[in-house]
Image (cartoon, helix red, strand yellow):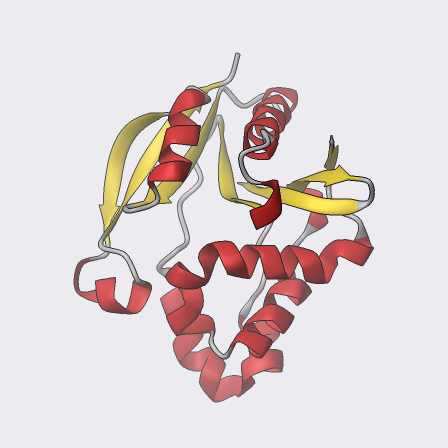
Length: 192
């Protein structure tokens, strides 16, 4: 397995499918139907803000990140309108904005990590997090921050093994039924 900066342009649709498989529970009510969601995601993912794990030319997983100069999921209302129409974008855009997290100076924000089902349990997630930590160090960041939604205990255990500690939480409040979760835990790891 090799972890590399960005992702191969030929993997763009695979990146979208893996992202959707990982985050459909959180974003499905907003980005449905699936065919439009996959097209929208494939159009907006930015390889410049991603690290990918590849083996024998096959995409195993991706970790996205966000910094002041940009992020992995970089769509705007016009991008959304191209896939959902202006009416669909008008209600989806504000709901997606609820997922936006403020950047903090000195932190690299991990903006999603996802591993192909057949590659889980093989160290892909650990390798991607290690690469994220190295990316943060190379960019002069002292910490990496991420959010994990309640119920995703497998991911939380991975993050804790990689040195992340809980530092707070975000509650969805009345929007929980739409967002698909009631709370998310913010976790931070120091870059060594």
